[in-house]
Amino acid sequence: MEKPASTRQLKVGREIQKNLAEIIRAKGMAAFDGAMVTVSEVRVSPDLSVAKTYVSIFPSEKQEAVMAILNENNKALRGELGRAVGKQLRIVPEIVFYLDTSLDYAEHIEELLKK
Image (cartoon, rainbow, N blue to C red; front, side, top):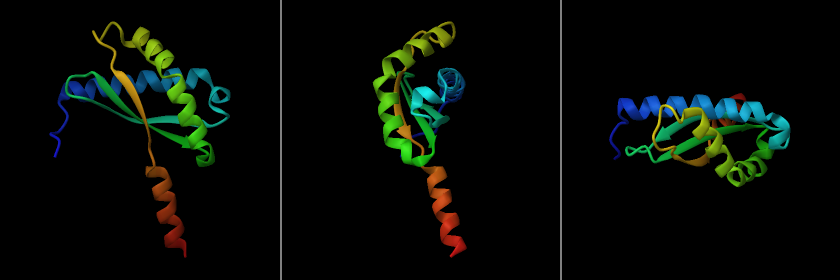
């Protein structure tokens, strides 16, 4: 079992989440195949070197395509993030994108409840 995140990890995670969300929003939906991309959570490793970034993508049919776009542009996004948080962080963490499926899961539960 992993130990709970430190206050520093949580603060860094929130800062990265805020800045990445802004960077992605600024690129516009056209850059992501017309999908809406939301950075729902960022979990930073204890040594602050890796940022697990959870994104939810709407509509869900475009999830695979958008994840591919995010992963292809990972270095550029990290570069932009570096310019945004460079003053606060010595090392800009490596960004690893994960699909946040909690919305799909909630939708699925809702559908089941309607039956």
